[in-house]
Length: 325
Image 1 (cartoon, rainbow, N blue to C red):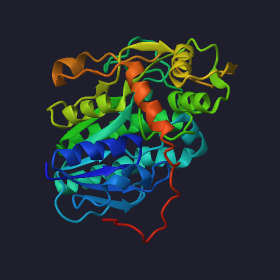
Image 2: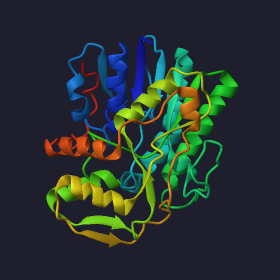
Image 3: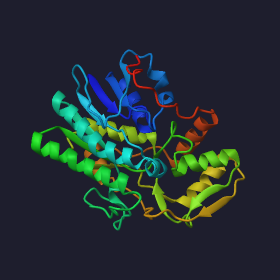
């Protein structure tokens, strides 16, 4: 694979994906409007002649010169806090942005990979969640702007696959954590780590009995890489099937941070999923993939990164500064 376009490549997952592709010898073009991404995440790549950053909103028309072998669509706000604050941007990048990225892949004869999400399952009534489960999603609830945008993105992707013969992949990403997450992005791990390191109360929503399954970012990107180079065209769950309650997670983070923060409880957000755990049978059998990094080890790596006082997200670049190289 000589050249890939990564939308949202300055984000948490997108930047790690760029690292992996460049390590394979693939030239990478990132398209990102820095709404939730940061140039800090790709600063180490800006001097690499195989890497190009372009400030662009992929909900608008995408023009790329030259050959492209793969388009990987990772652009989107990804935390409840983000998409509550940016509802229109979220639904546009999931629908119009997916349409634009698919159009680019079709025009270039490139393979297309969609970063979908476990949120397509909503608050699931089936546990663990296999790819064959259609989900339990509130189409007009506060999370629908993200959930339904991703469900529409999957439908767009399969429509291009079936109508145009486009070579497509869909990865359903479950909760992932690791270096380069934003401190205040609203998800459990960055929230707990930030609060514990600052000695602030650790906020747990509800009684903390709801569960999550947390995958370290290196494992997640390894699964995406295997899917990209596989022949699987139907959705694949990538995540860690080890389940932990949110309260237990808060306690583990507090312990690893050496913190004395108290744990406080606040009301559970509307439509917050009670249980979330992937069935990764397909990933194991068809991709030969499963996560390797234990939770405590991954959290320790993440906390060590945060202790390094990484900078907060950079402000969005003005138009006209595109094409850093």
